[in-house]
Image (cartoon, rainbow, N blue to C red; front, side):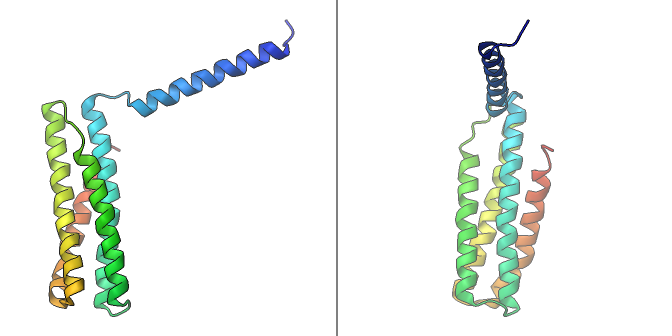
Length: 155
């Protein structure tokens, strides 16, 4: 049988449809509700860990007097805003099972603690309180580490 133009078109069309269907299945999450929430939570934790690390590095750099306070304030404020968006997006999830609820609570609590640490860092920077800022560095480090651990749960 010779391949005609219309036969080739149909074959390509079928391949495209199969690829699209596979992509949609991936996007809709083929896993259980527990797996989907865990994946979303791990992604949120990784994103949040990055923002907390940014705040920590900025605080350390300011304490070392290698950046101006106004620039440090802007970087930490941006990290705080991004972290808030990550937390809000995750908090909109609806856990469907008891296991999902435990996962949801664990990740929501970690995100909330991270938000508090970054907010306290911003406040210390704006107040020019180096003592409070120095106290925030280990808190930020701890929050980032906890988030990184949670971010590895779904891998």
